[in-house]
Image (cartoon, rainbow, N blue to C red):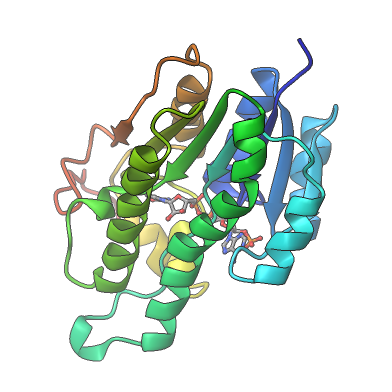
Length: 249
Ligand SMILES: NC(=O)c1ccc[n+]([C@@H]2O[C@H](COP(=O)([O-])OP(=O)(O)OC[C@H]3O[C@@H](n4cnc5c(N)ncnc54)[C@H](OP(=O)(O)O)[C@@H]3O)[C@@H](O)[C@H]2O)c1
């Protein structure tokens, strides 16, 4: 059987880059998409084989169309591109940030899924995997814009599963808790000190931990749909409860 193709969005860092590596190890031909082409190319080069890096801005219709035109076959789509911006209260909400979060996490997932669905169905064994978050279940102070986006993304995954029932395509949602990636650096606009505080005294998940879960879902027999995987570090019990060991600072 020829290798199946897996598309991973947001594969230039963190969970997406790790997922591309894990899926390639599991035998998939991987196509990596993100905006930072230099980083993306480096991840694909390290994977080697048939791994391909293609520029993608999930918020831009034309970019999504160009990207998908380069993907003639597709069995697995991992909608991972996304993240959070800021931690402002609703009282001080920056609407540009809220809009950007909705556009990337929610509409980005919809754009890619809509464009690749015909190929996923044609494959005879398609799989859409959506990377949500514990923030899709538990709102927290300052999380409003991100919570709203991840709640919405989760709704889209559920709707999609119902709409595709009877067709050869699975829909899985993987919802991580705290994962040490560039997530907090992006959220705090490059403030490394503030980002480091998020993980202080905690053993968070790694991108590889989450990638292993995604790959587990993608490699089940085709009649088995892992509906939802909520994956948290042992030090975390929900979005609002984190156990921290004392640190020197
Ligand atoms: N880390 C956590 O604690 C955590 C927890 C729960 C859920 N998640 C979710 O996991 C996913 C991956 O995040 P991460 O933790 O791996 O963070 P990350 O290291 O910041 O990775 C985010 C990825 O998304 C890409 N991306 C952002 N905007 C994009 C756009 N408009 N078009 C295409 N790609 C875009 C980034 O690439 P470019 O900047 O190169 O485009 C990057 O590759 C996100 O959906 C996030 O919400 C993360």
